[in-house]
Amino acid sequence: MKLYFSTKQIPQLQSLSLTQRLAAVQLAQGKLIGPEKLFLNVLKMLVVIPVFILIIQMATNWMAIIWALLVTLLYPMLVKPVQYGLCAKYIPQSNPHPEGDK
Image (cartoon, rainbow, N blue to C red; front, side):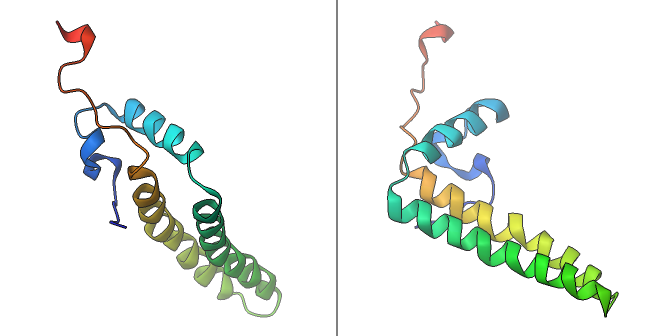
């Protein structure tokens, strides 16, 4: 699986606008099979759970909020590339000459 850090890097979506790329990724995400969805959700949980643990620790250590913010920044850096990589194979190859461009 190739990791994509932006929807613009996905070859099938390079010629589309941002809203069209996001819509295509959303449709492709609906086509993910069970194990792929499970993997993605477990990855999300591995990033989110430490944030809540650090927030709970704020009662005894106020520096935990800084760590919680830093871990929160990991979410888009870890989850999005994996999500885009999993969804890329479900995005159909775009037509270079759409019907509306005649």
